[in-house]
Length: 246
Image (cartoon, rainbow, N blue to C red; front, side):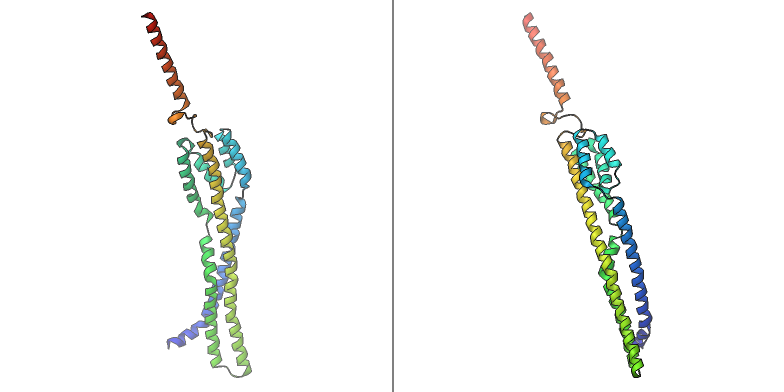
């Protein structure tokens, strides 16, 4: 009884699978177009941006560096802007904020990738499921087929069933390609942000980038050393005058 009911459900279920694959295909193309437009709008010449940032940091003009990043629409520029605002707290703080900014922007970069990856892995199986249901229907027709016309109907049903597998593969291909391409773009963004961050960190560690005053030996800055030297010179002159009076 249960098997007979399943046999009657198989044909409409196979058609539902086909409609489901078509709907998933439309969604997949929509995600791919949206991701392509997202990355196109934020495309950046990383070498030119790095040169501008390095020039500003070497000159100690942090305001110019922030202006360069503010005028750029890339994700890398947004990440560096967040990190550069912490320059007054030292290179270690900038490095930590840089890592945090990368993690915070990662969900925006990876929007839709989970859907594309899941669809690319499972669309062929959905199509195969539709094929199995269609073949079950064909076998049911085969049992009641009479003459050449009946066999023609059975062969037509088998052909329709195999179409589901073909559509499943066709849906999976662009999803897999889009997933790989956009995942690579996300990884490139993180690498570019790390490279630009290295420019900022190197500038700060070398004493540039507006990070306070030049440091003297043992971490004491130059102004403090000058103040101490002046105090020692005054004390030494006083001792000499006292000796002369004696």
